[in-house]
Image (cartoon, rainbow, N blue to C red; front, side):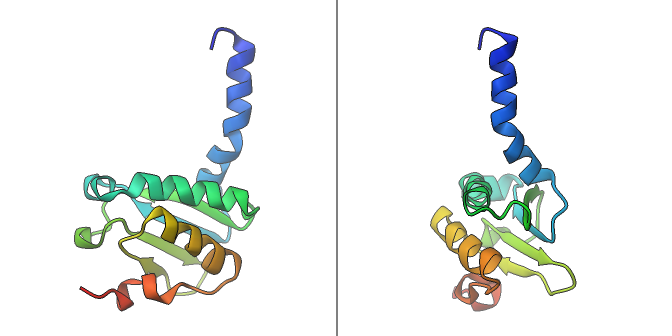
Length: 123
């Protein structure tokens, strides 16, 4: 980056990703990003969620954000989905491939991926 014009171009390219992570849409997708989550692989999960929501054109429907410790470190990476007055859905041991399926089936189609939820996790 050598000019202000290049900086403005980078800013414009990144604007959609920032808006996606700071918006106030109907569905909030929250990724635990405390030390335990990051160590377990939460950063690629967060990035995949942001990219998939944008790629599937769901930016007006869902916001991806991060939080600190969720309190269930043994299940990291943890992703929680909040939809208005519905009970939150907690996904555990999430991988980037699982994140893609969560966006497609839960966020886009409205059907939580039951086998990825904390209630169905097999120890």
